[in-house]
Amino acid sequence: MKQAFKYLCFVALTLVAFALATSWAPDVSVESLKPRWAAAPSQFIAADGMQVHLRDEGPRDDPSPIVLLHGTSASLHTWEGWAQALKGQRRVIRFDLPGFALTGPHPRGAYDIARDYPAFVLAVMDQLKVQRFVLAGNSLGGQIAWQVAVAAPQRVDKLILVDASGFPPEPASVPLGFRVARMPALAPVMERFLPRSMVESSLRNVYGQPDKVTPELVDRYYDLTRRQGNRAALSERMAQGYQADTARLASIKAPTLILWGGQDRLIPPSHAERFERAIAGSQRVVFEPLGHVPHEEDAALTVGAVKRFLGV
Image (cartoon, rainbow, N blue to C red; front, side, top):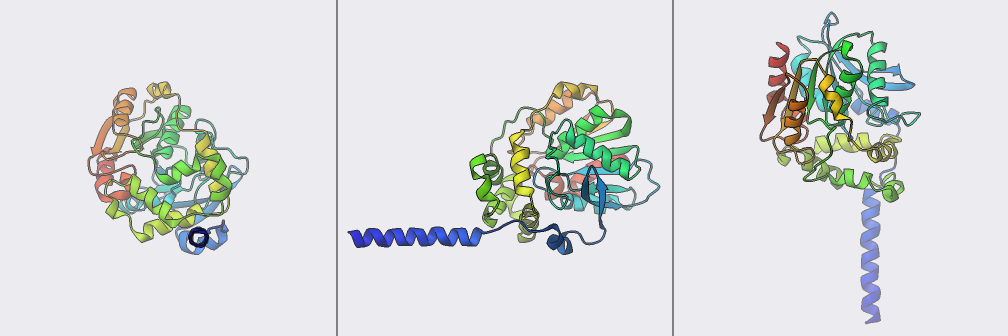
């Protein structure tokens, strides 16, 4: 019996050691990630004390460029389909937000959605000398977008909210990666270990059609999560939550388009109706088969609604 117990313990320890070894994923430098994830037309500009990873494409004489803000744990790459579809007619600007992807952690830990992120967006626009713009954002980026529209209405010509956060969360399902990031006790562990399977599981959770999650897509999220400091920054950001003073939505006068995935289990489609009621004159479009990142899951379908809204 003792021999059997020792054998089982040995097997268990071996399996644990194997799991840890295969999940070993320490931080990596931004320089090591640039060759794959910052090829042309990527550039880095100085703004708000950071080196901001940015792509700026399309005609420079556009009087109101389209600015695209990604969500939690995403990157400017999430907008690739929209950028390709729009840059022939419009100037399209997208960048990695503080705490994520190649821009990385903010030096002052400034991740407040109502104060810090809107100030950052405006700082980037000032650096690019862009005074007025169309602002679109997904999830966290959507919340930042409407906060900018509230704080600086004179600069936002039109607003596009894609599965935006802000109202009290009512998730039917939270991605595994987000659940782990909300556990402070696990933060030191997750800064050294990152199972690729957890990244894949989280992506499949936010897609309405999980079979669209490709190995290449998992690679991108996995690699950029490992950028030095990002996992610690994610824990800080998640600790602050996503609920906001949504009463301020009533002050938004910019024409607003609300896009939502009908299969979003993180921020349910009922929130699209709440945004529509809160923002006078707004338009709502729901893509029934899609999930929380509909612009990434089916760029061609979703950008069609954007083109109609913008008259492109």
